[in-house]
Length: 370
View (cartoon, rainbow, N blue to C red):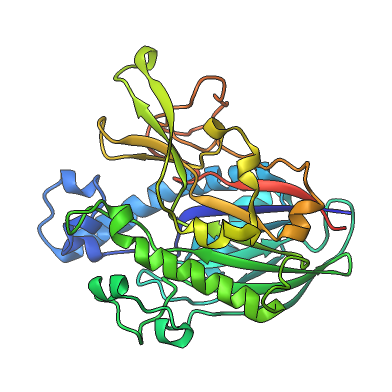
């Protein structure tokens, strides 16, 4: 009996309009920035038109990417709410996979924009085993003080002990697959943002992600017992907004593009991967072929990196030692440079920069439920 598990940051699956760009240019879409807009009422009308026109192609591509995972269970990030998820599944995904993901779960987390983690799953696996929802537990309420995780580094960022650890949530979902228990932890860690205080965005926000990773580990150890987590069947799935390696891209033209793997000195992933607490199964792929996102701030700053993870408990990883995850890159825009030999056929109507399925790529893996 096997299970197909996936994770995907679907990039702003919203069912409401964001008008904040009228007063905050950093939140304004670049299309509207081309035009002289004289009033907030005019801005609102144009933003609604832009968002609706842009969303149809985008969500067709998002649905194609999800369909390509062939997942029985898909963990998602950047979902507005259950209504947005239902509308997307019914209006787009249903047209590609039929009566597939009938079960949907999410809850409100801490994100200021209202984007949450979520889960969609089939009623049964591809080989006919039932998938049963048991319970769902949010940990969005936990503070640094609750878990003793407040540090001088967090204080320097203006984080107080009473503030919440998770920027979204660590959503704990208990299931049974073919009668066998499985626990999933859905996460979406603090984003990097831009440079500040003399540090790049990744380093400046690193203390928050370290705290989030420590909190996830604490939750799992509290659930199963410290020192007894290795023999249980669980996985952490989501967007960690961090990486241990990146593929640096240099050169100016297609014929001159060079790719080089570069290791990072520190990452919040260390908290979860050290001492064999769990395994990043994407590391089973070649170093150059682990990326799930293309990052660029112009020609002088370009790299590919893994931000999206399926971390398996030691027992589950051990019984699936030969399983290699897939990374679905067909929904990437044409501007994304692919290392030699990795090129894929893009989904129809994918644009140079947009529309695209998401800025992230789905990760999926087939696992035996031994």
